[in-house]
Image 1 (cartoon, one colour):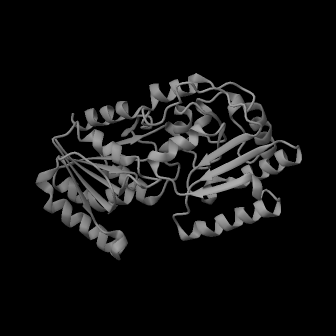
Image 2: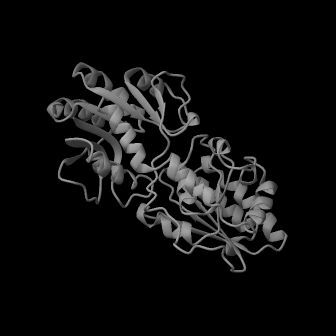
Image 3: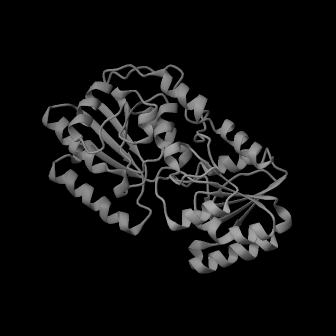
Length: 343
């Protein structure tokens, strides 16, 4: 069987979507040919049975032309695929779904977010099956939904061979993800102020970029708050980091703090767990599998500060990595999805 994949970016250097290149590589082992339609392509190394077709979003092509190109190329490439796998963006399913149905192609959607939009509702009607990482990650009731777990490359994200509880005299805190209001960094800043006032030694690193213009104002806001609290020496913003370089950041810190209000299960939390980090989360989906001692209330900075102090004293729990390997392993995910598509 031949597969068409639609995604936003195919680039190993992209922090947010760099991981998807490995998805494509693994899909190529399960299909005769893989064609990828994307908005932008960068650097990647993929097998010979993979063809990447860019629509050139960043060369000035507007959204309506992109949707037109999707329909035209879906027809022109009709002999190069038997099924379609839409990654994340429901608009691809909405725009291409009708022509794919006319061409008698099976349509599959991957979606992980608590948001329910009109586009998503239409996409649900057009998809044959919908894959999602957790029950909280797709919030439309549908018999088409299959909960598969996330796809974490546990060979890339893994502990050091002789990883031990660190003995340095400061707590090293890490958070990874785009800088946007949904990431709720204000709570970490408030918790940091409490730690500082209590004389706790710590540093906090935030890895992530502001991909949208509206998020740049949010970044200015939280940095101003850090200045107002005189926490400049405690926070380090490192911006964009290539996906393949993220493990070194996880491995050089003690505690991963996850504050995202997406409601769905985030990859970064699972990556940190796979690397053997102590983690703390306020996310709804995380409450289903993390022990109570590693969960805090979404807007409770005092509770977060207390749990940061507590987690810094505890040994790393190997069961956190085991959970990721057993439930969110990339090889298992791709095999599961490929098997269902190939039916």
